[in-house]
Image (spheres, rainbow, N blue to C red):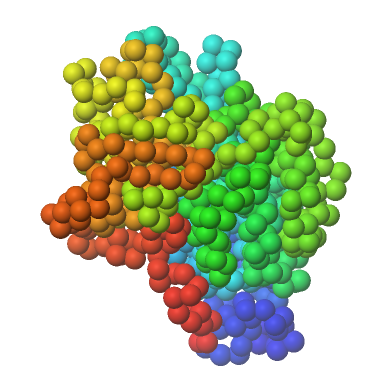
Length: 578
Ligand code: FES
Ligand code: MG
């Protein structure tokens, strides 16, 4: 019966299994080798599940089980699930930084979807870079796709206080360095800060990116807020599987979902949640993959008019993602912003966004603030430009002491992370609270991979004086759970000769956030002389993936995608015709 053309469904997987030829016989016989019957897969929508589980990724620790829920949904809806392992980007374990591998996951996702007999896909991700990595690849592949967010872990606990991942590590580490807590207290923090599987439960990069995926219309409504350990998460997984099959039958491809109005919705939602600065890089990359020319200026403009409504750490003071879920979750937050969102944008549910928000309510108005009582009226993010960052850099004004929003001070420059690390613990370091710490050679090529070094540690000497914030500038990123007066993503980066390479210790640097400026007060002739004397550092790699990365990664203001993966690089990759 496999040779019967009436088995043709018109879907791409037919090309593998339907023809009466030698090659298709091979494909079919090898499915039978796995114990499947033709009735299991022939003529069915075949759904590839990209599962980013691994033994090193605690944020996806439940994916080994959760994939069974997804498969059940696919089978219920008449599809056939095919699980494919995807690169598991564990934010907490990968060196030098998971960001080095976001584009590798994107390439793997795109290529594995294209190479296999797959009609549609469920993407399982959530830990920081896995969300954009999966989405970037699946957008380029172009088959119907739905994202299943990992869900946040349960809130942490330290002596009855809720601990937030990332944020409270930094906080208590500063206390330990200041000598206000000792080793046993520190151990208790270590044991209490990550209590269950799931991604970080602050509104760091993971929560921001899964919220962005939902706002883009790529998840089932409400999916991104469900804690990983809540059985509502299992049910969401099954529903996601069912929906993937329906999307194939409806031909609901990502180009119909990832449109400019959807991207604009995601930008507003990112700002209203307090926005991890990492989201900037990923949003730019995802939009550009979809052929949408999102710029840093668009993000700055949205930030100026969007209030921060999610009172979740690190932008908020008290709450975590579990509280956000109980308060109504992302649907409730988006419902508050209905007037500013493009409600006609189509989502994976097949419904326009506006329909999916119907009935959403806030159950705790301190956690999800109404528009007339935001935690900040504006200021998730500001984009600065000047002679230190001609192509832009970002700061999160809502997360820093306000005196730094307009600040002038002498630079204290470090050329590498080890140099900076040694200096900040030197009790004789010549530094005051007004100094501006600068770390360079930490960008996309310089890091390499633009590591999360941007929240430079406060020098120990100043910590002991009670200083807890300082102005810091780098071409690196910072964790979405970080905070403080950190200016990040300076473009172009110093490693390729951006002007950050020219600043010297003692130069006066002026930062003016209201006017969006960042300048070193050094005259042009002197800068020219320094430029003439500048020697480019040696590239980090001479072979392998790292070589490809540093030769093709775009700068932070373009999203750090590989130039050859961007839509505008060349013609789309053709479907295999063999
Ligand atoms: Fe995975 Fe934070 S370490 S989301
Ligand atoms: Mg992070």
